[in-house]
Every structure is written in C-alpha cells, then in structure tokens.
Length: 215
Length: 217
Image: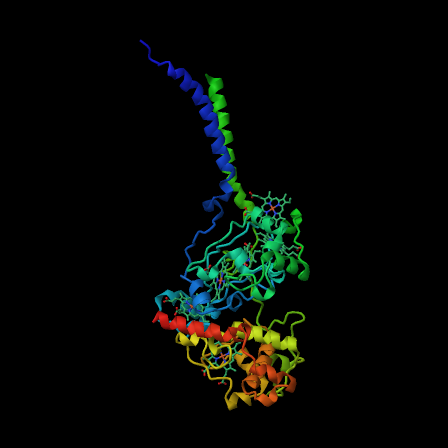
C-alpha cells in the first residue's frame, strides 16, 4: 500500500520550482508597490469640510484658476483661497445653502477653513509653481481636467519618475503661456512643432541633477 | 532545536524591522517645519503664520504715495493714472479684468456675467454716462474698498494690477462708444471684412454659456 502516489515525486519537485516562482513574483510585485494608487494616493478623494466642486466653479461659472489660486504664477505655492474669496459671491448667492454653512461660520468667527491637502510632496522634495507656469507647463498637464472634478483628486502619481519623465523631455508637454489655465487645450499645430518652438522661445532647460529637487 | 528557534527569531526580527522601517519614511516626508498655510498646534489661533503687530510697516512697504495707493490726490478722486499708460499696461488690465471682474460684470462690462445669471445682484453697466465721466481713480477706489454688494478686491488684485484694470476699463468704455470716425482711415476698409473666429471668441463663449443655462432649467 502506497501512501504517496508516484506522482507525488513530481509534485514535490514542482512545488520547489513553484515556491521560487511565487516568492519571486511576490517580490516583483512589491517593487511596483510604489505605483499602486493606494500607496501614492493617486485619484483618491479626501473628506473636506465643504463639498467644493471645481466642476461647478470652473466649468459651469467659468472662473479662472487665478481668481482663487492667486499666487500660482508668482510663487512656489499655488495658494488656497481664504474664506473672503468665497464670500465675494456667497454673501449674495446660495446664502441659505446648508452646504455653505461652514463658509459662513468661518467668515463670521474669523476662523480659517481647514481644507485637507490633496497633493502633498514629501518635504525633502522641492517644487515651485511659478517656474513651471512661466516656462509653459499648464495646470492641466499636472493636475488633469480639474474642470471635470466634482471633488478634487490627484491626477498623477507625483513620484520622482513622473517629474523626470517631463524634465528629460519637456517639449512633449509645453503650451503657449496664454493657454496655461485652459482646460481641454489642443495645440493648434502638431505638438512636435509647438513644443520645439516653445523650447527655444521660452529658453526651457529643466535640470535633472538631484539638487534641483532635493536641496 | 534551540539553534533553529534562534534562527527563526532572527529571521522574524529582520522581517519585522524591515516592515516597520517603512513607517520611518514618514519622518522624512514630514519635517518638523511648517509649509505655507499649515495648521499649528503650538499657537492658540491655530495658524502657523504670525500676523504682524497692528500698524507694523515692513521695510520697503510704506505707502506714502496717496495717488498710487488710494486713487486720490489731496482727498479728491484723481482723473489720471499714477503709472505710464502703455500697451503692456492695457494688455495686463485686459487679462486681469477677464479673470477677476468678468464673472459678474461680463467681458464687455455690461453687467451680464455668469455669476449674475446665477442670481447675483446685477451690477450697473460701465457704459452709462455717469461711469463714463467718473474719474479713473474711482475704479481704483471701488476695487480697493468695495462698493455696496461688491466686496473689495484688494487681497486678490495687487496695486499695480488694480491700476492696469482701471486703465483697461477706461479703454473699454471708449471702445464701446467708438464711431467709424475713430477708426484710422487706412483701417476702415477692414471693418467690412467678415469677422474671424478670433474676433468673436469672447462673445461666442458667453452665448454658449447662456445657452447652457437655458438647458439647465
């Protein structure tokens, strides 16, 4: 009477190979872990004090990004609008909306709204909005179709490989300065032509040395 | 068997520490310094940034030029720009007007912006005789201090841009009251030429928006 069938020999050998394969592919999977969206928070919506919709304000009303993010073109930080900016309009319209009560009480009590950051690079990486805006990189290129976002989410991974993909070859992404804030931009000619022209015109030369972003 | 147990212990310690090391990443991700607008648990008002003591004047920011900072000369609204009127100034004013004012006043200044169509109080047109004869300093004053239902724009629009907008408003008023006689003789022929897509872009955008609104109701 045989407890183990002959084929058990084969299974035993195969399981050794199988183990190596399984462990190997698990390790392989682990090296891609950084690119999983629940690790880098790509396209994850955050709970905010107010259900603020970019779609409403940008697409429906047609507001320009700069109406609220006033410092994007002049400083490192794009800026989050103070309550007063909301009250420019909401002191008059939708004044009874319950969704806007946090805005009104923030204005009444002079207490800042506490928005939760959606994009947040680690502190050892340096980023600067004004450089990118001046050299012809549109908001849309990095933040996606904000005008189609009922709630804000992070469109790209914001990982180093993403920054470098552009820093190594920016021509594929550049647009004229007049189109920086446009959502749904289409180049008038082929991007190869536009990109090459703007590279020269704006003297674009992004660096890839480590100290550019880790300073 | 102790040898085997020992090895197992070392192995699990290595695995555990490498897993836990992942958590240390956060220290480097979040340095003990404040980012712009970050909240603070240290200060009682919850702000990381400190507001200067009242009446502090930062070096280089004292505002002694009455004309430039208030739009007035000797307490009277000034009817002149404190800066040179250049094509660049008007172009800048055009851009800033479209960003900050057109949502309510409309691109042509007739008070038919998108926010007004959504129920905001309708501002008067800029092309009335009263506003056409108002001194240019008046526009600066309204932007700086607000006017009735309109909040001030001093926080969003810096002083040089406010003058650029004021200059552009004046140009807009003149353009909306222009006659054929105002067009240089050599350019008059082009008036009869069919409009290009570029010319009507702003107008179309507004009509498009109006159509959109109708659909919504």
